[in-house]
Length: 228
Image 1 (cartoon, rainbow, N blue to C red):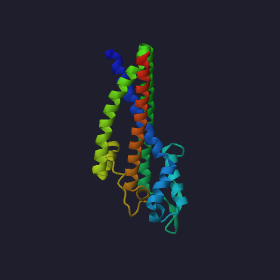
Image 2 (cartoon, rainbow, N blue to C red):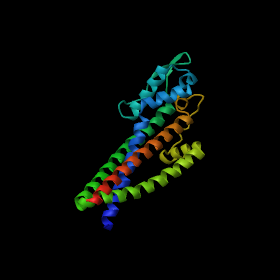
Image 3 (cartoon, one colour):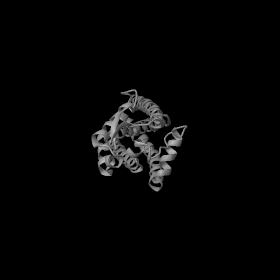
Image 4 (cartoon, one colour):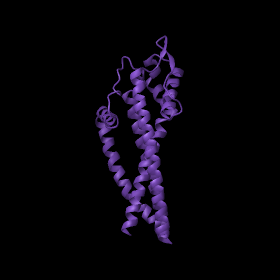
């Protein structure tokens, strides 16, 4: 195998694997069905003092804002018998930071996907009948790197999810607006630690399935290529 093509194959695989991970994170984070399941499982509406419909209305408002489909998170609901704004000023300011992170993540994900595709096309044009052998090599190296990285994150998250989640926030945010008081914040009661644990777990399981299927498919075509 040519060294240049091997390097390009690894770069292509890593770009695409990270782009896929970002895509899965967005897919799960904006999946309304997942929120309904978690709310029902944890009796979240009852804990907060809201109806199921109001809880989902507040959730939809948040998700639409983070998806840049609206300009604010202003939403009223009946909470413990009184009509009030669901989210307070601190939560609103934190969501500004979260939305900025989402927009940057989308841009990076799209850029990585484009870069991965360009590298893959370059490989195909350069190697042609051997292209899948190079794809398989790159995917093997890329998967090894990702598996080690994700495994370390998984062990960390399972061992001490609170510490994992706090350090995640300190990594991406330059303030402490994400630290909310459960006595006054509806948002933190909507999304307790168990919610995020399940979300991260689902993302990791789905990601393993996707990269496993992708790796198997590339290996299949690489073997067919070798037989020609």
